[in-house]
Picture 1 (tube, rainbow, N blue to C red):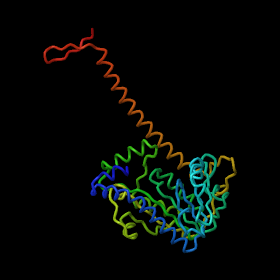
Picture 2: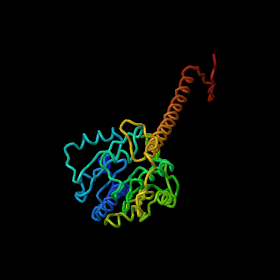
Picture 3: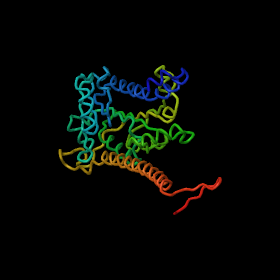
Length: 315
């Protein structure tokens, strides 16, 4: 891609870079909120679906914060191999491998040293758009049960585009579906705020890429991603609610159905991805089959020309 950009005209390069700039702007906007929380004395950070997140490795402002990265064990094993020679800048970096078939989110966090009685910054970046409404609400309830007064939730989501699903969005949707990560959860600002408030959080701000760029002194991004991306910041203003019995505990090796909030989200995402991928493969297979069938007929049935007409003989 870098080679293609070098060959492109300056105007085209600027357009492409403007589209790509939405994601690094999102990262920097979340970093700014996280630094403010660190300066305010918050000591815990939980990154949901952390993937290859590098905040614990690159942000000196996290020197007094314990960082808990939550993800699937296979993903974390890969990341730990790649970062084995790096020293975290955070006070501690704790990988919390959550096997969603066997454990709950808060239970796994507590086993890794997480204290639900302390204020926490929850980062939920680039995940909500892949989940159903029910999965989002249930995960928000889980997060609320693990949030003491003064906790902060940093959540990114996508809103429906003003002009519907344009060409760029259709191509991206097809690509993500084939990549087994279909975006199935576009939400209006009102519905997202309602879900967050329903879990016991107060909405503090809801911003878009143009506002992030202005705050950071960068050029405003363009394109579909910049149009639909949002960063919601919400605070926990009330005391921690006691969870139902057994909700916060997860015995190693046990099947914790009561902690199925994250399990539900995981199954929803994987199930939707499989359905989309199966549909794409079925469409592709049927197209190939039709093409092969037509080709076979043409090669098997002799044709005779008669003037400008073509007639097919069954003999």
